[in-house]
Image (tube, rainbow, N blue to C red; front, top):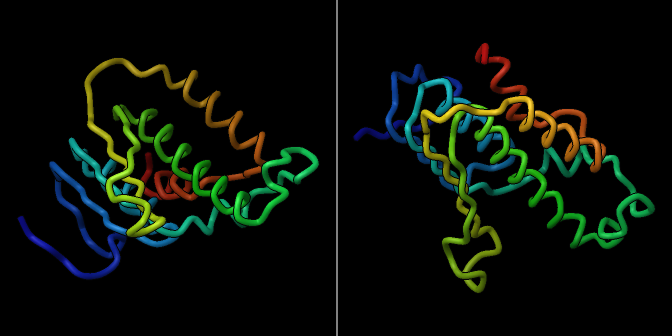
Length: 155
């Protein structure tokens, strides 16, 4: 095992078995997931932190979705949508995903653990793409940064 400090985008990652990203702010979680997918990681574990990208992207209004009327609920919904999209995108690339709490909420509000285990089962990419498209449409989201990060890696 080795540890490197710096941006994951600046690191030439070799074939990797496990990628762990703890409290990677804003789109750093997406950079880490994309790097793990590109490196063929068998296990990707992330504790996402900020969710600013989707919060800025969401174009749905409170008239469209009443849950977005209240600032704190808008914030939480952005986090839920962000991590749901991350999990779906990982599934598209052959990962069985799981989202769970890993620290009690009294210690930190950022207590979500997103993990993905690479499997060899066939993936219905069309079905998953449909779910991703529908979710983005519902919330008025053009692009999720993980999609962009994967495209930049040629995936």
